[in-house]
Length: 422
Image (cartoon, rainbow, N blue to C red; front, side, top):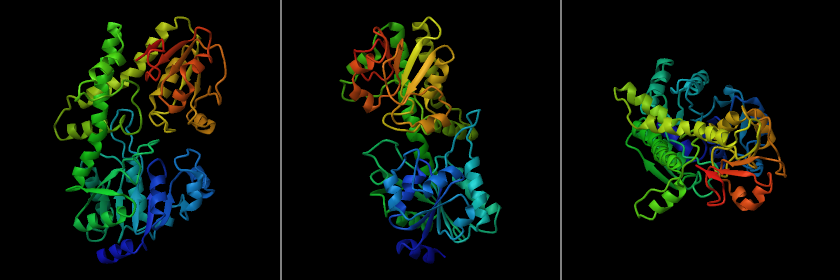
């Protein structure tokens, strides 16, 4: 079986299917379709119908890119039955108690079983805690008559997609790969070498899982420290940005900026690692402390704005809703949380040039504007440092509001020109 599967992948005759066509799966499908026959599978029928018309409303990939590929799109798992390789790129969120929610992965594994697991290479790209892939393999073995590395193969290669990043792309980033044994690893390597410039081989799957989950934990902790500095500076009535700029003149100072910390990865992965640590008898002392502090920043900013705007029903324009700069990715966006907190007391309108009205309706943003125009705003809050906002300039932004409009520049996009910043 191994030699037959390897030959098909080497000769570009393998059928490769992607489960989950979001920020990870869709760009991956585009790249793989240049080398293999591909099928994109997603349960969202509306999304599938749009993709069949070569349209992506989230603009993860361009419609022009979709026009160029011959991939088949389907919401029917049976259409994947002849696949040689199945890559799972589903989100791995947390539940209401901030515990890992792997229901999506398990459901996809159940579906794969129904179309026959035998002779297939299953690759997981979703972020999980160390040891999760072993649990998935055990699930597949326990629910079939098949054995790993004999009847089917398993690989893990964590995604490193960075929405909006034009430099660190799917092709240029270093890709960590791992497999359930050497043969699995070889199959994964042959496949990914088609479109990835640099590959790093992990000793085993658990090392790869751990490496991925700590990437975002490290960033979360670093930002949490800077956010704490910002909170202290606020108490001292001094500028955190001025302090950080001064400190960054030292050669080994790590430069991070305070702000809202959202996104699907950085706001979730720490919970996955802390969960696994607790499961093996270790109580994290740092990871969740950083996460809790970053989660508190939204409340701090909302309270500060409410204290500044003492009267209720003040008019506020919130500029930026995506979770990060120059991106339309709104998953776990703290700007959206801020909007919902502020609208409890004020008249809040929102503007984000990267999010279309269809998306805004989906996430229940009911007071969005398509185009900026002058209004009697009491305050303008810049919550995301979009390049388009920077190009507008602070003078143009001020003209949108009242004559003495207050500017709360959370990301300090315009140093020394705003009334308030974090």
